[in-house]
Length: 60
Image (tube, rainbow, N blue to C red; front, top):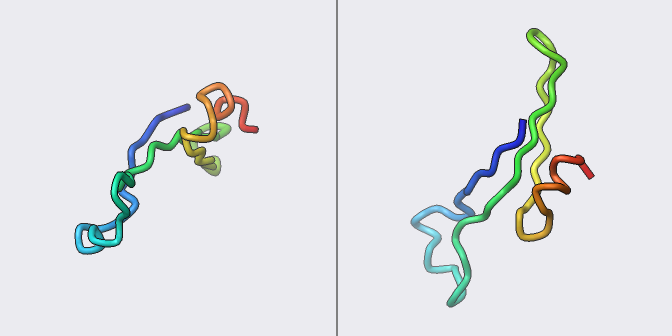
């Protein structure tokens, strides 16, 4: 499975450390791998600024 998540990079109390124009969130492609029920689940995370959906699907 492939999902796209937006995650917070900082907590509200750390907001003052951001530079002007810097984003406080990051978009990630998350790929889930498993062989089925009762099998291990593996995840790979790809920053969408650097990797396309196609890159993530191919697992680079």
